[in-house]
Amino acid sequence: MTALAESGAPASDPIVNTAVFALFVAITLYVVYRASSRNSSTADYYAAGSAFTGRQNGIALSGDFLSAASFLGIAGAIAIHGYDGFLYSIGFLVAWLVDLLLIAELLRNTGRFTMGDVLSFRMKQRPVRAAAATSTLVVSFFYMLAQMAGAGGLVALLLNVHSKLGQALVIGVVGLVMVLYVLVGGMKGTTWVQIIKATILLLCGALLTVFLFGKFGFSFSNLLSSAAEKSPLGDKLLEPGGSYGKNDTTKLDFVSLALALVLGAAALPHVLMRFYTVPNSREARRSVVWATACMFVFYLCTLVIGFGAAALVGADEIKGAPGGENSAAPLLALHVGGTLLLGIIAAVAFATILAVVAGLTITASASFAHDVYANIFKHGKAEPADEVRVARLTAIVVGALAIIGGVLANGQNIAFLVALAFAVAASANLSTLLYSLFWKRFNTTGTLWGIYGGLIACLLLVLFSPVVSGAPDSIFKSIDFAWFPLKNPGLVSIPFSFLCGFVGTLVGKPKADADKHAEMEVRSLTGIGS
Image 1: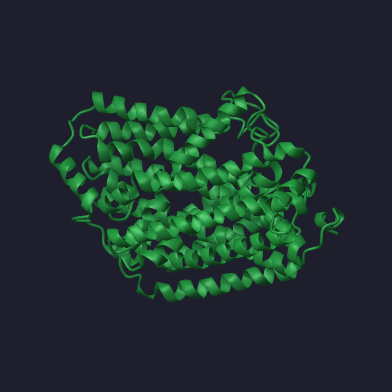
Image 2: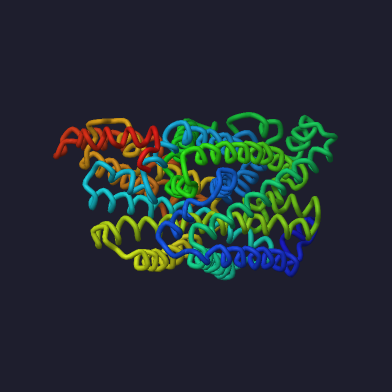
């Protein structure tokens, strides 16, 4: 029968799994349709008319940040690698806090819809907006790869689809549903999907955690001991270094990964864009409190779920299942509650994928339509209806590229793929955002050098790394053109981006506009004029 049945696990029922997922899609599409009735302006389509409360936006923010990597990838990484897998949870949570402490509210007060609004505030509009849109599209594409790869592995597990062609078709269907969310609902509909998804995700994570604690006598020590006994790593499952301490290269890879995770969140365009859906800075701060609380609870749950999967499912069954490491949480649900719970957890995972990719798609399409079409091609004089139409067409193109990329990346650990997206975001955006906010002398040349220098360096290092070729888990396994030894390029590309921005500012002309910098400083700190 299925690979699960052959391994002795309870068999899943594709009909039940499909029915639960279809029910979720139907409900959320109805919500999106109802929410879309007032998408008559660019503010409605891009920022939901800034009509959400802090609590609503906070829950949606957590939904945007808690991607398939957080649910499927981290649980699998903990189940297989133990302590080293939990580093992803720590990294994502610390990244969120760094994002808030550094720049989130400052950027929200300065911009209007996109990251390009912030970067071009005191620079030359056309070249800087073009660079910001390019960066946003590339970062969104990398982030989408992780979500689509998760969709392929999850459906392979649920529907017993083992062929690459079958999984590719499923990834295509997920991509089409995601594009439909964006085309119909805009930011308002997407936000409601995020709220629904985040609520269900937190409830399911909490219920699984409580059940696992109960099964092991409400003793975390018992859970860890059982996980170590069943794992091939033994007690090393609970110690650092099982995955990243094997040699000097893996240790450097860990440092690079940590740097990318901690600094990348502050430069993710789709997270920044969500702060524009609230009416003022006070509600933005409230949304931060709610989002932080939700994410703190969930990442604690991932620790229990990951080690619970190691104890009850086992590394061999997880690795042997379709989807590999990403199957740990669904397999745990199958062992714990049978077919029905698997269907529910699968629906939650699909909701996670659909909602996050929808958020990424609307960010990418808004950046192209607002920064490139409206402000470069139309010199800021585009009709709102035309701008929204271009955004919707862009969403279709972005969705198609995400489907193609997801097919190529299918089978990779999605927590790892998201870490790559964080590295691209930090390399391309972080230096220019910080320089724009805090360095009075920073100018247009520095902005362009920082964005393009960091982006090109990061992409080249990824292209010639073991991620693409030369390793058993590479995208192209049969060829080897890798010369860069690290899987995550952040350790090199992030400092290089700061260096490019610094040097570009020193050699660039014209000099920075002191009056514009003063205005930007006041606006970012007070929200006046935002």
